[in-house]
Amino acid sequence: MYEELADEGFTVITVGIERSPEDARPWIEKARPQHPSLIDIEHLVPDLYGMINVPTVVWIDEEGRIARPNDASFASNRFKLLTGLDSKRHLRRLRAWVRGDAPALTPSEVRKHQDLPTAVEQEARAEFTLAWWLSREGHDDDAERHYERAGELAPHDITIRRGSMRTRGLNPMGFAFLKIAIKSALTRTPLYRRIEDSPA
Amino acid sequence: MPTLTLLHDGRVDEIAVADLARPTISPEQVESLLGWELKPEGLCQGYMCIPVDQDDLVREDGLDLRVLADALQRPLVTEEKHAVASLGASHHDRAEALDSLDAPDFTLPDLAGNLHSLSDERGKKVLLVAYASW
Image 1 (cartoon, chains in turn red, purple):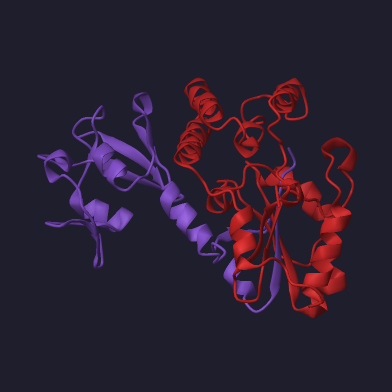
Image 2: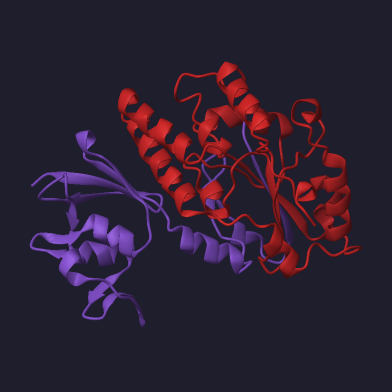
């Protein structure tokens, strides 16, 4: 994708939302990307952009303006079966936008599809930052209370709940995540927020 | 005097506090760390001021950190046992920034430790992809 469009004034920036750069290393070394491939151990990008899960993509135009806000999409269909996310339509749209064949979204459409952060989501992020500091200082038991609190405040924030699992000795592919997935299905709260799914 | 570790804006700073249960911060540190100046009209950044009840805010050993956080609409959560507090970003500031449609800039390292900023790519269309191994 990047190689195909790099000559058309386009780049990709990937940001690994990881507590340890080592967790991202095998992915990055395998892909050997030519574009910036960054690591965000402090979860800065989710905080700045109000992201509540990964993968999340944002289109940004030549002037640094948001042309299409947070949308759940992968760069390939590798995880389609697990997540239900089909990347094909997104890639087709992206190609058309980069080549100038089709506009992205109008500013009012971008605003309509943005979920702006709330006070309680920001409090959850503050708890999460505190918990992460406590983990790194070796105070795991005290950290756990703040991870719990962050998850209670923002149960829909998967970057917090699943993104903290390895630090807390939980398996992000195991039962702890299965519980979140089941609860999300029962309460009809989607784990992945897609622009396509939101009411027109 | 005990010190409080203050986590804020992606930084870690130490502030001297008289009482960990009710932490205060000096007006000088409010200015140098958080960018707000206490004036008779309130907490100010340049010409913009937030009115604040100074009787609540100003205590003899500094500015009450909780009252300050409330005035700035920033969440403040603490773990007294380890003398640490986390001052989050205001949802109002975050929402206003996103609503402006200017993509928030950030600077992060790659695996080799080289720093890159979103703004380095100005003039190109950018697909920003947040992903994780978990």
